[in-house]
Length: 106
Image 1 (cartoon, rainbow, N blue to C red):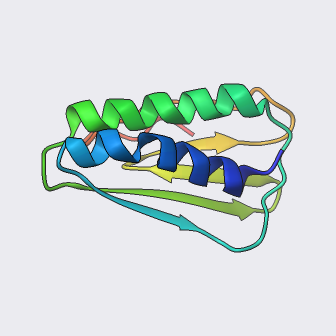
Image 2 (image 1 turned 45 degrees about the vertical axis):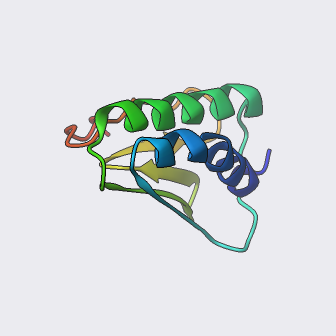
């Protein structure tokens, strides 16, 4: 599956809820596709849940930045202070985020 497009779609789907909560939304993705081995439906659902939690737990005026990037053998999606890592094969840790939450163990 292609992670960059999925991240953009998940942010687009959650943008109205985030803006209604008084949050500024930014997306940072490269122009190159990020191919990963993952379940697109589950990942989209997980990102949607993270964004929904962000809308509920951040303060109005906060900025939410969702970033998709890659390093050797690993794709990284960050939204707020806690990253979500997706590495082939499936089974990488995923953690929820909230404003001010401590990062999950790597």
